[in-house]
Amino acid sequence: MGNGISAKCIYGNGEKFGGDKTGAISFPIYQTATYAHPEVGQSTGFDYSRLQNPTREKLEKVVAALEEGCDALAFSSGMAAIGAVMELFQPGDHIITDMDLYGGSVRLFDNISTKNGIEFSHIDCVKQNAEDFVKKNTRAIFIETPTNPMMRVVDIRKTAQTAKKHNLLLIVDNTFLSPYFQKPLLLGADIVIHSATKFLGGHNDTLAGIVVVKDEKISERMRFIIKTIGSGLAPFDAWLILRGIKTLPLRMEKAQENAKAIVEFLRGENSVTNVYYPGIEETEGYEICKGQASGFGSMITFEVQSREMALHVLKSTRLIPFAESLGGVETLLTYPITQTHADVPKDTLKKIGITDKILRISVGIEDKDDLIGDLAQAFASFGGEQ
Ligand SMILES: *Cc1c(COP(=O)(O)O)cnc(C)c1O
Image (tube, rainbow, N blue to C red; front, side, top):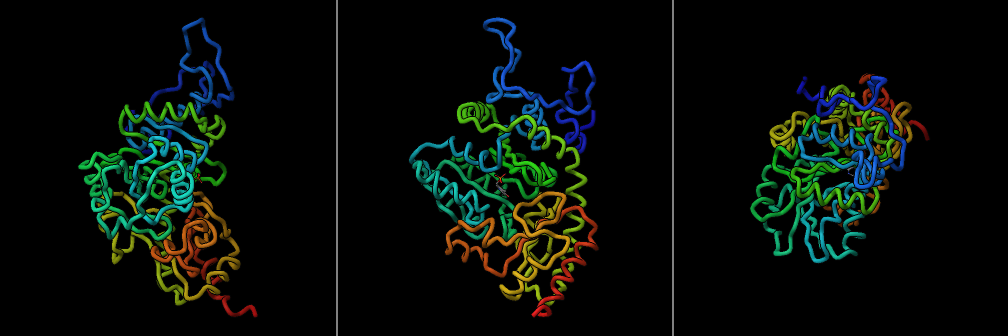
């Protein structure tokens, strides 16, 4: 039995599917809401699909194996996953988060979780020490790394030490690098979250979210939450994510190779004033990222000379669509200030450095010459259209 990550992507924990006489290689879609019981007091292991469904369970086992967790739970979106994790906390609890997070997480924390009595400190987890913000009622630290969209790198091991010392949960949103490049549970995190809509699914065709946990106790609580709030992933969507994961290693490698070439191109382009990518050696986070991940991924953020140039590039690419989201086979250009980060408070945007000159590119698996050619013609045509 193969223990490599590619085998895990295809076979999960290595259990052969034995429930089907046809010998189906692709795990079946159990499109059922409920299950017949053999007799009173007995169960096949499945009672009702809000609690569990075989296709969802298969996906959960595959991701648990990839992240090396004890359990994983699949939700209807990344935000549903993060929302469910917030149900672990009580009114009066305090959570420390990095200030540079996916905009939807900030919206959830500042509007829904705060209303439910949870208190937040949004700090700079790169420059500040999380420990200085720990209070009596602090229960968790929530980070992403590299951060969205400024690609800053948070030291997972160091943050985990602080969490351990004060008995806090360390929650890491691992969407940007996926378990192919980074496994936060092995670096000391307690909970890993994914928007499986992105790299895990990989085809921009399904919304899904995953929570992976390190120990049984949190698993039990999360299982209670998923069955109670009912935001588990539907069987067909679970199957699409399972299918996407089979090619995760190939996609991650190809997208990263393309990203490195695009970074080089952008750094040589006159109208580009800054490129943010953790794989650039002179970058602040390079060494930390190298020490905690096996790759730098395929997300690049860059700054152009003016707002007009940013808007021009967004409407002038011929191949690359201007769309939110990331992690799919299609390269996408995003304008964080009006899209992913539209609901983030203005002073936070300023602190993080998200301006109207900042563009984000999620690099896909097309041929790199086509991508560079497309960007080059977009830059070159600026000013030539009046
Ligand atoms: C997209 C995203 C989310 C939210 O996931 P959805 O599947 O869109 O609900 C959370 N975190 C990060 C880092 C993301 O990129």
